[in-house]
Image (tube, rainbow, N blue to C red; front, side):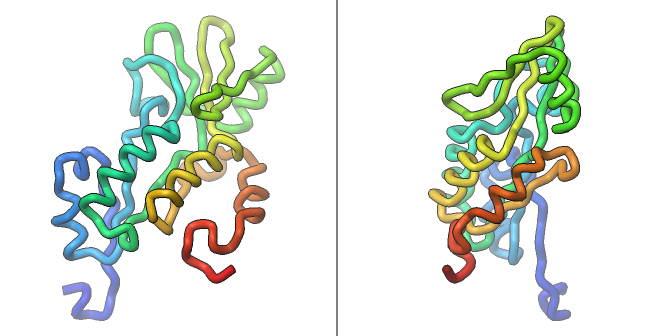
Amino acid sequence: MLHGAGLKVGVVMHLSTAAAGTGAYWSSDCDRLQALGPYPGLGAISSGHAPGPIAPPAWCAERLALLTAQIPPSKLEWALPACGSDWSSDGSAQDLSWDAWSALVKAHPPERRDPPTNELTLRHDGREAWTNDAISLSAKLFEVRLSGVSEVALWGLGNEDPRLWALVDSLPKDFLGTEEA
């Protein structure tokens, strides 16, 4: 019906839906499928779990492989969170903006970079905070590129590391394969 009216059809698809194998079904009728969380380590979505990185690169690679086995990469858009989480000892978590992260680092230095994921982490007041910054997001963007997916969405904007925009501006125009160099 929408195609008949000359409109394109896009659907936001929860990753659990794709894990159930329905991605191929949706891709046959849609022009674009945006794959969205739940992301390990992200605030209220992961409450009750252990603190840790938010959508680590290896996790992204695994999910992208699952998705691209069902959905043509040209129809897929990978959504990444551009924020962080602050975990209490009881396993509950709160979303963490870049400004809140910066205040924590100032009050409880030093932060450290997690080697396998490149994410920043900080222990403070019996809590553990993790966040994405331009460096950790670049590792995730590289996994997207390796998967053959050429579209990325960032969400939680307004809470991101402001250096993210310098990173985006510095990428080659053909980084994700969609623009001419």
